[in-house]
Image 1 (cartoon, rainbow, N blue to C red):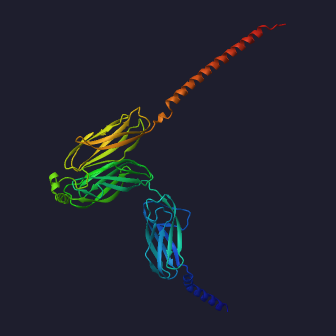
Image 2 (image 1 turned 180 degrees about the horizontal axis):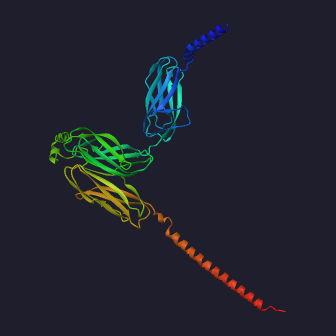
Image 3 (image 1 turned 90 degrees about the vertical axis):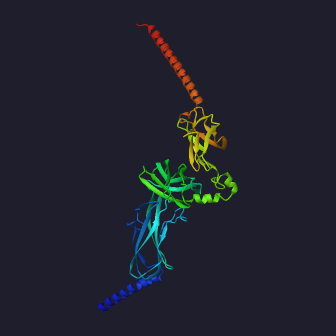
Amino acid sequence: MNINRTAFIFMLAIMLLAILPLAVSASGVLPVRVDRVRIDSIDIQDNATNRLDIQRGQEVEVEVTFTSLAAAKNIQMEAFMSGFEYSDIAPLSATTRVFDMEENVTYVRRVRLKISDEVQQDDYKLRVLITDRNDQELIKNFNLKIDVPRNGLKVEDVVFFPAGSVEAGKALLTTVRLENKGQKDQKDVRVQISIPELGVSGADYIDEVRHDQEKGTEEIFMRIPESAKSGKYSVRVDVDFNQLHDHITAVRDIMVVGGSASSGSSGGSGSQGSSGGSNPPSGEPKTVITINSQLETVTPGKGGALYPITIVNNDDGARTFSLSASGADWADVKVSPSSTLIIDRGDAKLFSVYVTPRGDAKVGTQSLTVVVSSNGKVLKEIPLTANILPPPEASVSPTVVRVLEAVFIILLVVLVIMGLVIAFKRREGAAKDDSSDNSQTYY
């Protein structure tokens, strides 16, 4: 009897094990068991106290190992993080293709997750989700910490002038804007622009790019060779920072209109031929004058303000350009390398206007005008503004200082008078004591 009961229980157990996967599948629960999750070959635990540190700007591999408890179809695995401000533009998620599972088979699926460099430094949850078309999903949560790299720069923008296309033999000016995505401020950042196919390049330095701030270069000059053929060229941007130990590269495209194309377009009109077939194309100004900033802040005694002005000569020959200042009775103005320069056709020159406030300059907004002229003709008048801050030692006005000095002298005189009065009273009291002692009668 006991043997029959034991055999019955054994057979019942086998039957339960056989129908368990079917029961699980029929209940609407996804028949999957997650065995292991790894990020870049590092094991992580579901809802563990510890957090895995990941730097933003990285691309990490999420590897999930799981076992099917029953056959299933149309399975998909997804790894994602929520709470990113720009997740609609750069989602923090990655998904596998749809696949089928067989019963009692272990599967390994990998996805690559791009961590945007715009992600804020904070704690996040990595969620691993396994689903099919109808059953209840299986989800696991893992604690992550998104950190900021110690040194990190990003090419935020590259601006060309002229924009879109440039004619062969003309100047191409490039401004590069960098954003500091690292923990440290970056000093003496070197930015080089080059078109390797044409063998031209230019460079500039940025003194400092602070943490989580943006800063741009001055206009970097490159002259496109006259022999350049029409077509699209790659402009390479190389940035060296962290004492020139770190390096990043960006590439932008620019269209070059070759010399043959430009000459062909300018030779169709008789009137143009009479005035010279090398004149600038229709709509292109003969002279381009640009300035980065017309407002600067100055602290007296700590240098002056710098206003870079770039002049591009698109005329049919070399021209002489001069800069002069008016309305600057409150400052000393110097133009470097010279107030007058000769600029060849298609070339560009940088005039650096240094404005140093004089000692009697008033605190506040002061203005002057820089006049750009060529061959005695005024081309442009550029208003410049300097915001003069009070010097640190001038936080207390001279009037207040004089009042304080007068009060101090009065207090000193009062103290001296009080001291004399007290001294006289003490002497008078001592004299009375002496007279009373001499009048006593002894028996």
